[in-house]
Length: 435
Image (cartoon, rainbow, N blue to C red):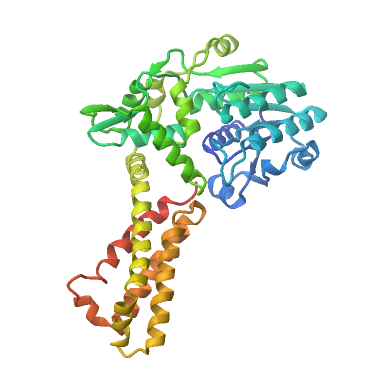
């Protein structure tokens, strides 16, 4: 491909699609720079790629892009967000920043490859699709060399978003829950998506808008069954179709958690999109390139499913329960300390403490417990909250062992019960690390 020595800037480079595209371009000989919001995360995901720190929410004018576009031949936009939240602004990320980027690229003759979405339309039901469509339209209006790719449900070696949800659902033992079993879906393998982007950067496919989908759509139930087979999980003994009202309640609950920073694939935008189906037209891309994209069974045949994929799927399924259990444990521990203040104080005064010191200690550590129970619910703090829980629990064990060692023999086992809670926090900590 005519891509060697081209300078390419990839937006959203450490995301699910962005990381794969970045590695693919680099493998073909391009000089790739990763435009990332967090340099530390970028260095962890793409350690051998030049990092450029930037936030699309702050790049709303063409002048904001000038410094980032020095010596760039092509920009590949893989950035995106599912829904508005504390760290996400759909209008800015999908539309305003991309419109400014298009104007800046037009002034310099820089080509743009845009990763959009099937269903992106200005009259779409979700703000995700509407803002994506607005960004596409703004780029077209700039008259830059432009390729717009609209992938179907992307299947890759790693997982995120819809792929992660598929694997989580496939991990449910014995039973297969599903919300929209008959909705039609067309998938695309990550390798085919990367090949399309690379061909565009090399100017080997005509400029235009293309749906990147397999030829034949399949019901979501079949896609899920194929995913289950690939992961090596036993076939479900029976399927439970989730009623619409239950699906709506789950989506609203996921939306509420979104305000706390949790980017659940069950949020209302994702559920609405899935309910409408993911169906595109493969013909324009096939006509332009002379080839069809791999069907789902072939995509999975080219991927390796190892023990870690099954483990992540199962733990992702259990993670909401783990976080809820830890939050409840620490909240109740603190509340019981406040409610039972006289009894808790008497344990310390019986060990020789003054009443004032005993009361102050119980109050302080009860509030610490409550804080830790709430902190794990705030997604940006969740992983660090787990480590803090372990540290505080270890302090309790050591302090109680020296101050009131008799608690180890208490029939209710107040100290022994701390050990499994510590273990659960240690298990949750690595799983809550950001990608």
